[in-house]
Length: 90
Image 1 (cartoon, rainbow, N blue to C red):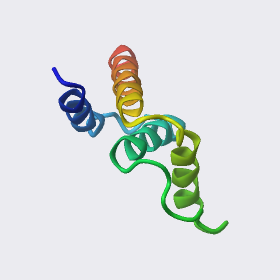
Image 2: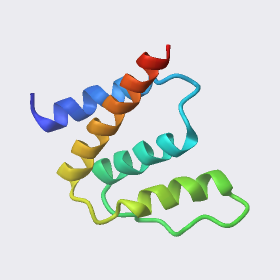
Image 3: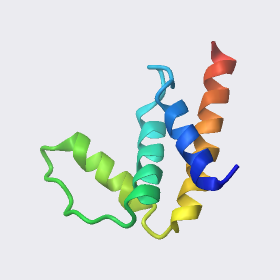
Image 4: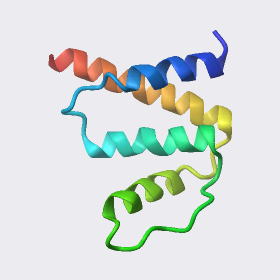
């Protein structure tokens, strides 16, 4: 399976993660997803009162140096890990 196809498959699987998934893990996959689909951060950092948007922006900024392929690969690996952990705790 091509990397892009596998990435899209795991993007769909990520939507099935349980509600108990930590915000930290959700932010990690958010940042990787944005890096893989958009590229480097292209907006200014949200203000201090927009805490949710600011956390998402920071997560994206944290993976800014990764290539599209590297971000896709890391995203797939992280979602697989999160799905396995969810299945183990179910």
